[in-house]
Length: 357
Ligand code: MRU
Image (cartoon, rainbow, N blue to C red; front, side, top):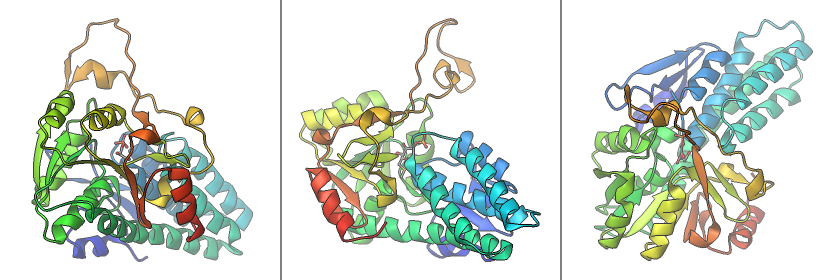
């Protein structure tokens, strides 16, 4: 079967998720930055476990990985009838969609692949169209990130310092990244851009992943504790904030990694433009802010730093993985179709009228 691995290798980018020899190959992000290693998933349950354990994370990467999970379920199936195959795919769909609740790309990707399976008229056609659709999504992801990068890079000037939170880079997508794609594109256009990455407690996506991938690609990057954001903004050196998103509502409410909201408040206080880079697949046109589920992660992530316990036994702990930034704190949303400006409901409508999702 064809794979998508070669494409990103040719682009000389880290390849976060790939289809290779009837399996899904993922960079093991739990091992970064100390070791660049890969995990090979041979069935959809292994794919689901990898998403749950954050071997792969980041909204677009989770979506494409889950799509490949369905492709695995189809290709490994021994079903004798189309109905049997559909029933097996339905089970895989349920397992995969229950892995993480907040990033909408997961549900978008699974629905898109399932609709291909349901339209198929034979077992062979279903198996083929499911894999083809997943591979197409992986290719599209890179193209969309490049387009988003090109749209967003026009906002940056030579010499700018950009602050980002969490990891919205190659490692959060198939390759190239959303927020970090904007920085890559600006650099490809000859602009010298420096990045300030927040550590992003408690899972440390900023230090473990953003600092790693930018260093890997030769981008000037400095790491700061999450608690230093206000101080850095007050110094006047940060020219822009660019973050990714796990879900953007039609009103422009943005759900992203916990801590994004406080970065947005500080940016607003210090008059630093705050941009969100998100493909249209991250938009949720149906939900209201109150109905989005914010993932609660294991308390252990907060109790320990590495293996060392840093909180007293018995203390109550909350560990929400995402927060919501309201539209009034957002300067613009960078998409593959252009940069949306407030009011977002209006600018989004305009973009959607020109495109079919
Ligand atoms: O818990 P994670 O690491 O999956 O959270 C990831 C984020 O919050 C990213 O900022 C978001 O998915 C955007 S990725 C392009």
